Length: 378
Image (cartoon, rainbow, N blue to C red; front, side, top):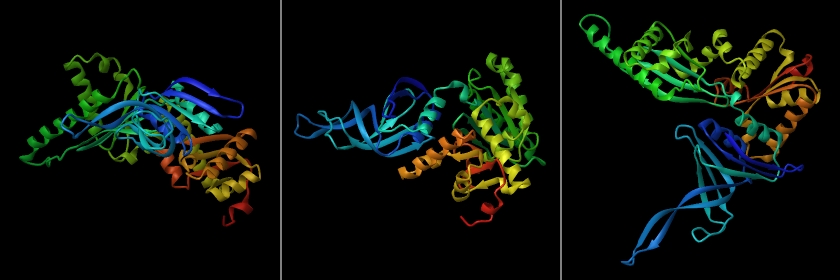
């Protein structure tokens, strides 16, 4: 994310002008832009014009509009953020108050104006503009006939490719058909890696799965790199590592991220910090449950007792259409930090965020046990 302008006064009223560079940046904006904000961007508007025969012709005109936000939607597959609202800048093509949807994609600048920028929104902007916050980890989860290529960034995990092939049985006369099919499957995986992975950005490519298919893919990549004189792959062969996983399905990513060897590759990133924090919470829940609370009721009760040492929340809490709900959790975040505590805001598009969401989206590690609150129905 590029920050072109930031103008926020002491009352937190103001605007920021940004250029999203990656799909991850759009996810950050999805968590930042809320109902009531004003967003300005260039957009295409379909216009009807009279033609010489008396009919109507339509054409798409590029205009710059400012809309008062009423709905925000994010499409990770299309890599697009859609912001719908009423136009506030009347011109010859669109009336003031008419509805329009801004379609924001990477490399398209926009300006976001808020009456009150809260600390969480400003933190998200800062993280997105910090290149070091990204994990830059690529993972191929693979088993015979199935593979998923995932990019794990600082704020979300994106599926870049799914390769699926029906393989014949290995026995008897079908063996030759199997060998041909598995080679074709590995070639498709190789092509997906070449297309989607840039080693100028990605720190490490992990190939993980059960059995020996992962070894077969690593060997195939090395052979093809030499055969096709692909210097980028040959130079970075030491950054292609293997890991164990139970399957080639996406849910196995959590096993990869739990590996100490992989964690060492991304130890200074936000994604790694989230994994460590969630592991610490589960460990405390097992050994001393009176110091590990989850659910809004119990966590807020612990906060009132000034007991929270580490607060874990998902970004979904801050997308609430109820502004009072967002404001309440923003206040809790600020108060926990103010009392010396640590706060982790998990991306709900990471595996760790999905796990936390299953625990209601909020959890806390406490400085001291609160057995009385633990037993309460809240």
